[in-house]
Image (cartoon, rainbow, N blue to C red; front, top):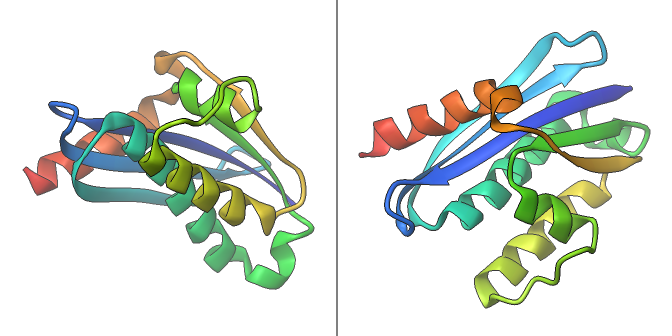
Length: 139
């Protein structure tokens, strides 16, 4: 199986009211699940990580943990920081971000091949809308 996750997180104020959003699509490009969660007062980087973590947790529940190991996932996001940290290009220095990074590594480890790709904001509009909807609900 193959899925694509489009994920986005944001905060109004940084830190400020934060939200995470993600759209999960199957190999045909059909939406199979989405995430839109208010996160309280957080930074935008925290929210970016949380969006992907929540997406992996949602996908694991959707397909079943037993099938996750045979599932390939492509994560697309407009956060260059998170993508480069997940690829090992940038170090994770902040203690809170180290925790988020570890949580994401753990969530992704249940799956087969996982890759992270940076995309322009315009190619991430579904996830952006879900993150903004979460912030609107919490504000």
